[in-house]
Image (cartoon, rainbow, N blue to C red; front, top):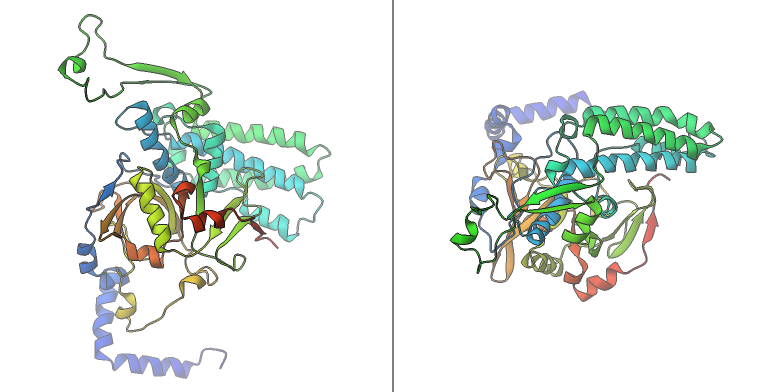
Length: 448
């Protein structure tokens, strides 16, 4: 039987209606939904927000209605370091500043790829892949690193959020329509590089109108914290003679600011725990072609399996006051309201009285864990008998109507089953992993 048989449907219905237990479950789920009906309250109670190691990473972030989680998560690594180097309690960096240049770079990459493939037919698979991608909000660790290394960072007040940065749907619609409208003109041009410059000038105007104009230089005024020895009542008072506090002024470019007070993000390496139909072998380094938001900068990562060695490296990084950028599928075993990530949180298989399982190494191949990819930062861990029990996660979805004020507690079992990748500083890796990341990358492409 290849098609649905109506007699089978009748048989299934009669069987279901005779099962009183299934009728009880049906009433519960119809009125409350799968999530509420299958959520295990004991799991919620077991995930207390108490940690052995915690990094003070400032207030919770809110990307609002945009796909900038990867930028927010990356700046969680930067903000504590910059605050420490400036000797201030905390600093909030501008996500909008980096977002502006992400949009500009991805549009440049799109135009250049159209130029590179102008001799191919418009129906060619490679060209169609480029056209489908166009530009978008989403990004990766390496995208953020390339942007910050090139353009630096600025405090939030220098280039604050705008209506469009917080609600990016219209901007993405406008840019994608423009980019695709320019394709044929560029492909037919005798001087496409010159035409590209004109098109990029137009893109810049769109971005400046919607996101604001990025600064070449800025001035930052701040009052550094006093050392413990000098932090007495006399130091805290306002200078009565001059009537001002001990305020410092710095004027510099965003690149100078990042270089002087930030960290080298290139010292970190992207470690993925999920393969796919192109990345079929574990413990190999891969380079993805045509994944460059910044032209010529492809994604390079190692695909391996989560292990105790990697968890030890994660703990080392937290012990050294450095958060961990990581990515996961936000549709899997996550309660935003409760602020819990736990592999046993929703017992939906028990609810339906069925059992199925997907092997961890086959999740990518079966496209199981790619529904709603989300990047956040780990800022703490609770350790018991030398082993991690739960991790503290700084999310970027605000704090309204959330039990843990926007923070998330992630049980260690979630790492074993659902986490998709982490970014770790190379010096914290085991010797075995250090050798593995030095492999020559295997190039893969998803357009062919």
